[in-house]
Image (cartoon, rainbow, N blue to C red):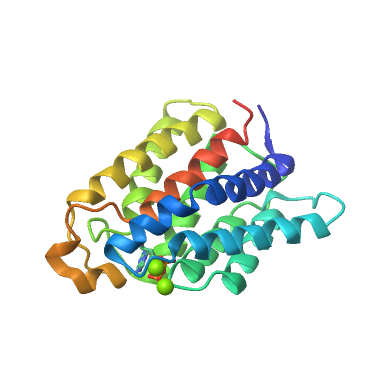
Length: 211
Ligand code: ADP
Ligand code: MG
Ligand code: MG
């Protein structure tokens, strides 16, 4: 399976479909420890991404071009903390994806770019019960997989499964960033919505490989 521009376009569209399907679940998670809008915010953003992609008749030459469209659209259409966070994530990922095709190490660079974007924007570290707790283990797993000679697709699979474990582990954490931090200890026992949506986006990246 080649991770090319068509893959990037499928990733964006698979993300939109998966976020739409998980909208109520993400709203419910955010209702527990936030303001209950995370599913609505992301669904609005990714539906706008699909409309934007539909307006571009020909495939752009580079993967980064697709990711940049995703980034700018999310930034302008997602309300809430997650808009600028995911927007910056996709923007940084786009910057390191000025390529027509990704090998395993380029997939790692894309994921590292996304994580750097999120931390540059939100200043959260691992263990603060945010989307960083999904992306950081995802990057670690991706590095290990790529170094072990995994295919680009298997790097994504490794990243996705580490992100899923990281998101589950947010249940036990106290939130110290974002809206959930207002709850302090009462945030324990609930999964972070942004970590959950991050897993959904990485699952979409795997599905876009056509596996
Ligand atoms: P809002 O909190 O403004 O309503 P959303 O509900 O769309 O925005 O997004 C909430 C998610 O954003 C959280 O679950 C968390 O994962 C993420 N988040 C919030 N603040 C930060 C931050 N400083 N760094 C990383 N992620 C953050
Ligand atoms: Mg919210
Ligand atoms: Mg909000």
